[in-house]
Figure 1: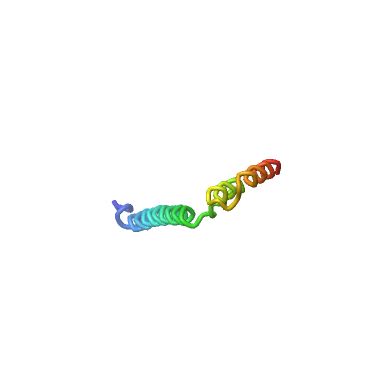
Figure 2: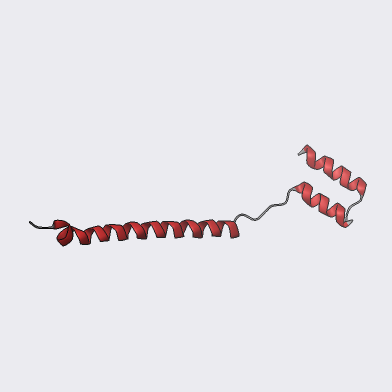
Length: 77
C-alpha cells in the first residue's frame, strides 16, 4: 500500500501552508504600515476661523470691539 500523503502530497501541503502564512504576515505588515503612516502623516489639522480669531484676541492683536465684530461676521458665513 502506498502512502500518498507522505510521498507526493506532503510537499504540496507545506507549500500551501507557507503561502498562507506569507499572505497572512504580509497582509498584517501592510495593514500595520498603512495604519502608522496615516496616523503620522494624515491630513494636517486645519484651524477653524473662530480658533484663529480667539488666538489673535488672546495675543492682543485685536481689540474687544474688533473681536466682537469679526465673530459676528464669521457666524453669518
